[in-house]
Image (cartoon, rainbow, N blue to C red; front, side):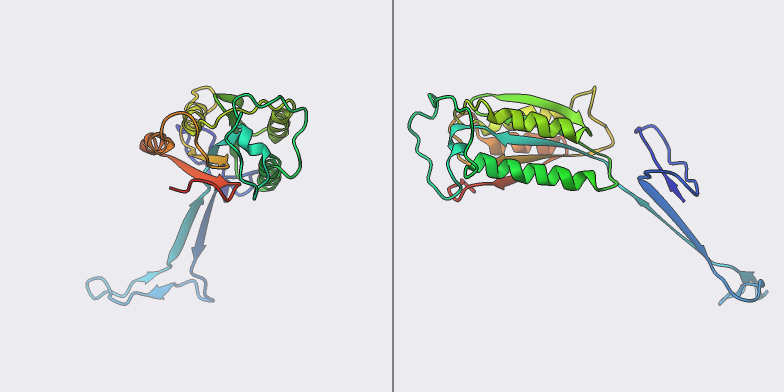
Length: 232
């Protein structure tokens, strides 16, 4: 039997047939030709007793709330293996298009592929999107509308303004996305996916922000798109 729970206060009500379940309960009883059961190894008070063993198991699928933190700084326009210069990162001329060889484009394709795969799973996954450079901005609140997520991510590339890299600002914004009382689910597992070339040039130490998020049971996973990333 299976069940779906949609709120933290709701209990699982198992049925034999239900669409899009997030929990499954399985029970199995002992079967033999005789209905008399099985002799107990140690009879109670010396009196033989028959019993029929039953095994049961329950598997609950965790719902996921995820915030994607996407680096839109100037250094992301360089290619993966090309060292980025530090000159004029703030005053980068506005770009009308981003090269398909750039770190940003490579990272975007990875996120789009991930969203395609997430749509094929039975899990109820809600995703938000935050882009950052000098500042962090929420592009998409938590949603299961992956078409909107794709559109919002693609809108970041034209025009492309660039800027410095404030990793801590992006992580702080992700915390706000995952704590939004209107869209966040209290029972969901929460985590942040930080996608960056990993070169902080502005703001506080992102490790301190990640520690604060961990205190709120929010895990932070990092994905680097450049060899020059700071992995300390």
